[in-house]
Amino acid sequence: MTKLPLVSGRECVRALERVGFHLKRQEGSHMILRRDNPFAQVVVPDHRELDRGTLRAILRQAGIGVEDFLKLL
Image 1 (cartoon, one colour):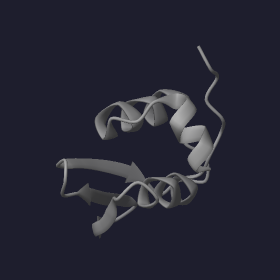
Image 2 (cartoon, helix red, strand yellow):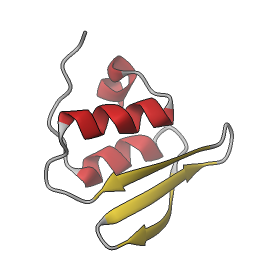
Image 3 (tube, one colour):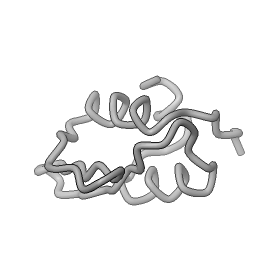
Image 4 (cartoon, helix red, strand yellow):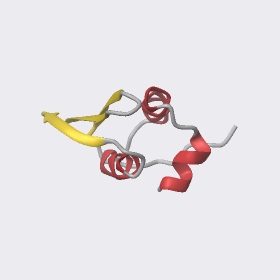
């Protein structure tokens, strides 16, 4: 299993935007991103460093593998 890198919330959003997600809205420090086809919605905290478990949950909800995410960074 590939080890997840430490990334900020904004870096994660930029990577997700490359695969079709767009910023729907922001509530406080949480950015809500949505992809229409196929539908998926994820919440990314706007933190300096995302916990690896949080990042893994975001990738699972987005339907993206770790290797694919690393290529998007």
